[in-house]
Image 1 (cartoon, rainbow, N blue to C red):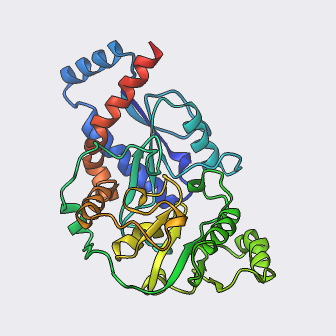
Image 2 (tube, one colour; image 1 turned 30 degrees about the vertical axis):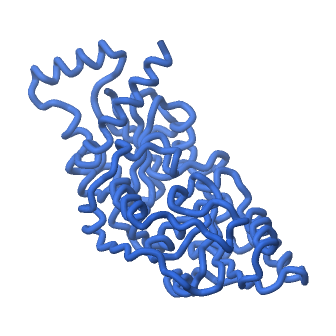
Image 3 (spheres, rainbow, N blue to C red; image 1 turned 90 degrees about the horizontal axis):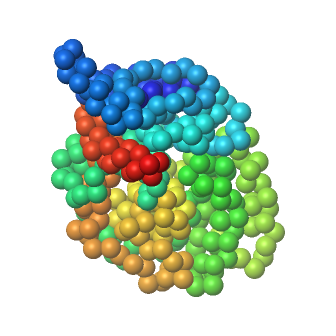
Amino acid sequence: MKVKVFMNSAGHNHERDILRMMHDGITNMLVPTDKKQLRNWKQINKSLGRGSGVEYDYSEKYSKCDVAVMLGSWKPGRSNIHHIVRTSIVENSKSFICIETPLLGRQVFKPNKHQRVGINGFLNRDAIFGEEINYPNDRLIDLGINYKGWKMNNGSKIVIAMQLAGDASLRHNDINQWCWDTVHTLRGYTDRPIEIRTHPGVSEKGWGNHEELFKKFAFNATIKDVTFVNGREVPWESQIKNAYCVVAYTSGLSIDAVVNGIPVIACDEGNFAWNVAERKLANIESLRLEKEDNVQQWLQNLAYCQWTPEEMESGKCWSHLNSSLDKVLKEREEDED
């Protein structure tokens, strides 16, 4: 197959380094070094209607290949070159590999040791992260994550996790409208105190995106016991420590909450906690708690969705995705026929 690593999909230099390591790992695993094997490999790919080789691509839009590799999610309409390249790949490629932020052990203002790596997407029920099997616990152990089960009789407050306005994981949903509607709906079923947690990465300019929401809550006397918490100043660990539950659209805080035994209401299937969370706001006082063995297995599976740059360079990441990627390519080729 022909693989192109699109370097201009990276927004920062350290992201380009990750792409270079992924390039080297794919090359080592995919391209035979023996001349006879290389010749046969090229002939097989040609018979399948595929190209062959792995190369860097520095163009400002997608160019033809079997598999495109890019770093980061895409935001159509953005003028940054990395968003233009990513959007072009999504709109035109047969299949692509998307490298994104990790699911477990996320750091907000620090470099992450792992990266989520998915085929044709980056969200739950959207991307393919490997074979759909139950994975062992080795990678979860390496992450130092020890799930101890649900916390029973925990605090009384509800934490609503905000996301950055326009974030790609919202898939064009308005986070402010979602928050407003969510609080209104919850107030029809509970009088528990509600804390709205702003995203810790919101910029000074980004605060303006929430201004109307702040005003609506400030001047609406009918909605009681709702407060805002600055996510930049208050660590999520301390805020959810005594929470009754966390409500989120697709926020990664959902995963952190479950890891710490806090129930979650997931409001969109793109949320990675979707399969182990409550999904209906109406059930706020009778939350679904997934069996703890299933939660443990879910965490083990999540650990196989993310990889270190060193594992990308060694080819371990590519090996994990290869069989799934081959299935995707064959399905696309059959559709074209």
